[in-house]
Image (cartoon, rainbow, N blue to C red; front, side):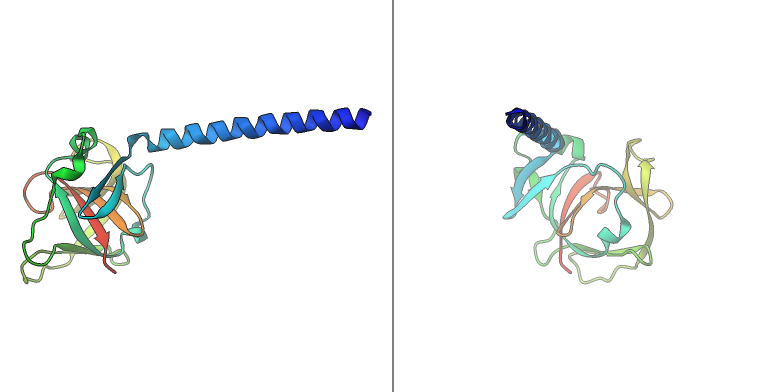
Length: 177
């Protein structure tokens, strides 16, 4: 009888721990997803949120096609009701792309025209971005130019900065290879 009471007590205790842990997990997921902005751009589903910590430079490696450009900074994009309707593209024919070689710390933007661009040396840093004063991942190139790396995954890359000399813009990129 005594073993039976101990067994029931243990089962009740474990059940309450499982329920408590599940509630914490749900609350944690809700907190992480709070600042994410979801939408569809050109038929591609996007979830845009700022990376929480340092991004590994190897994740940038490869060729990235520009899918959409939002004319404005990430903070404006984040506060809009339907941000996916505000994306544009630069090219009528073809597409823009950026190629990163993380082993050599160089990148090359390729624009709509067939002109070949030169490789540009960069440094990926995590810290206070000199252009906006925020603590984030950013790329410094040509000594005084900065591009914020909002987030990067195996398929998507989100950059904020002045890549096309048209002011601060948010760039959604998709991995080509």
